[in-house]
Structures are given as structure tokens and as C-alpha cells.
Image: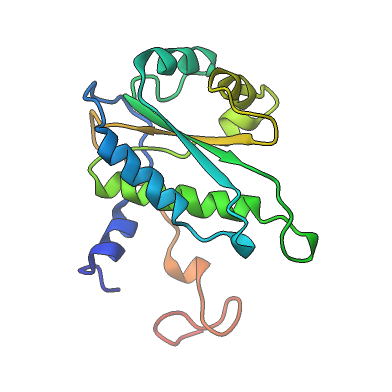
Length: 186
């Protein structure tokens, strides 16, 4: 693998961060760059089902963190809230999940490239507690949009842990499931 390529190195080294954040504000210019990378993601049939809200007002962050239980990202000085619209596209299929997944990954890579930490929090806020609905209410999100994810953004207090990954040969092959590995052996 060409780990000297800056993009490949960024992808291979990005880690989810669930620790404490330094109190340093995230400049608006950086937040705008992160939002732009999310909006630049591909979108099924170009329906552009993703909208984004950057939150850097300490009072609004305090309100949002008050409804997140158990608490996550409570020390982050900024947060990106990812909104999705269910809009049918090709053959009456909706690609909103794919759209917001691509946008989130773009933003996670941008966040990392700018020297910040983050983590994709989705299930924690969209499960039966519907924390997402309470966050959406705080942010005045109109009907027709669903808040699907939050991304804390900030300088990390400590280095993130690298998860143990299964070996390549257990998860990736050439020319069929369980067939050739990268060295051509079955």
C-alpha cells in the first residue's frame, strides 16, 4: 500500500475520538471548510438530501449536551449536526442513508486533516430515546428534516486509541469471496 500518499495516510490514520477536548475554539473558517467537504460528497441522483448545522455557541452547546444521556462529547467546543431528508430518487428509491454516510466520512477526514478530533455519533442519539428530536428542537430544525448524526469537533486532550483490525485476508479478497488474497494465494 502506498502510505506515502497524503490522502491514503490520512484515511489509514484517522481514528474516532471519544475523549475530552481542549477548550480552544474552532475557528469559523475551519468549521466552514468542514461543512463544505460534507456538502461536496456524492449524492444519489444529485438529490442533495444532506443539510448541516455547525454549532459553536457555548450556550447552545450547553443546551444540546444537557439532553444527551449518557453524555458524549460534552467538552467539545463545536459540533456538526447532520440533517437528512427522505427524498425519492431513481426508481422511487431513497439514497439518504448513503448520502449522509458519504458526507459524514468526508467531514471526518476533513476534521482530522485540520488537526481536530471527532467521532460519528448516530445510534446513541437516534435510538428509542430520540435524543435527535430534542436536539433538532433546540436548533429549530423544520419538519421534513431528520437529525441523524452529531460530530463533535475540537482539539483532543489525548491521542485516540487505534482499534484492533482483523487481518486483510479475513475481510478482503480478489475474484470472489474467500478466494485470492493480495499475494495471489487462496
